[in-house]
Image (cartoon, rainbow over all chains, first blue to last red):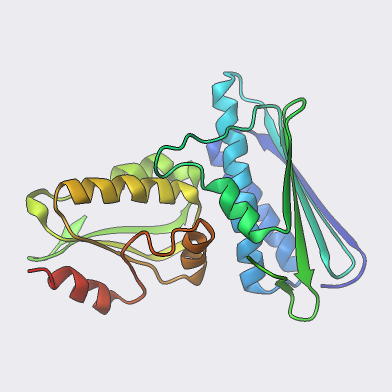
Length: 139
Length: 108
């Protein structure tokens, strides 16, 4: 991962079908940062869960809003990703098989912060190990 | 779903995300007569927790129907997905087709 700053911003209508193109845009961005393939897969997995949750709220509120993905890499070890939408973050019910998205994201990212004032804003921070281009300390 | 005389095979491939949730749910159907099922995910390049939800439902139905299932996963990211979710031991996952088939046949 080189020095300097790299940014990606993608906004799409909040639909299930739009999660894939947003994820693909993020993949291209991560590949341009020269990260290890396993790190790229892990980041896409974590962010993919947050994107999936973002589009699910759109249906609860009726009118579909939009979802914005913003990725920011600076220097050799910092990667921050934001997912914002106008819905309400759904805490999945305890029914078997649901509610794993946040757990998966937290297992991969250094931190996952959710701000629910005025829509939902999820901020993920990833530690990138510069030498091995891997995520540091996956729990 | 395809089957030979002894095992039914359900194959899914590509990227299984929330956009394909309905398709995944429809695909995970049990055969009749309790034929063991191989769920072949060897060609799946990406999966999110949509698939985990579907696996729970499928696994429950199989248990109720006394049907043995085996899940073939090749891509390491999918194994990690289950581990990140704390489900590393929750499903009968196999990394090679031969061991999956041996498992499915071993109950007969």
